[in-house]
Image: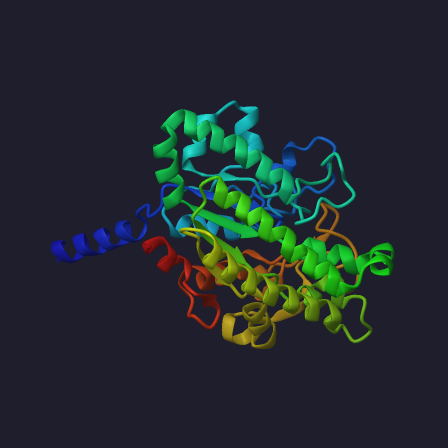
Length: 353
């Protein structure tokens, strides 16, 4: 019996063993773990109740959800603590922590800078890359050139971006009058390709790239329909963007030395949850858990909002963001999903390279 328990203990701890030296996270509110809390003039924050109600300590941390998000779950799967917000490390002058991973993600961020030229509302991807270049500089100082190169070549670079660019386009009458959706999506892809090449030039070798989900099915978009249907035009362009992104990743694989990646087809998996909710333990696919008005999507999750008690039953936490339960399922697919959804490698296979 003692030997049996030893084996169980060993397997448990082996499964939690650290498999990569660090994870560097770039993106938007789907993976923001608190960077926006450090932007003094930003309104794009989630540092108030009822956010964080299911997070350890039941405390709002700047995560846009009821609990942990994809960044937390992915870190857990590779045996690392969640990569801390870059701005928290800078404010504490703790550059030694850069070696354990950093999150640059910011709620509201996009591939494009948008209209917020002084970065008050969020930190767009271009600025996130500028922050990473400073981290790279520190790593070279701390580890030496070859040491930093080796460290980064084994680390993971997670990219979760694009939703806000598409949401912004369809909300803007001005943008839609100036540029066609096809031109806009193509510009997104070309811009992101340059940004990924920049990351590669600064040592990134293993990329986990997450496609845009069926954003036309979030409560904020369903609310606009009298039948509470998904906004299909937005979904169609999300698909076209994802198709272009997949082609771009294949191009980068052939153009750049040691460029390896895992792409996750968020759109298809999220639609599976929406269309077959009972198979995944969900009941509510249209309405948010926390909010006000129709589908609880006429206001964000504010302290005055009502929230559901059955949060594991809901796909969406608020008008845009998934619940912790949804994040958990999606990251299971990212980490060890079949090639139908996660390709050419899943994250587990990418780590093993």
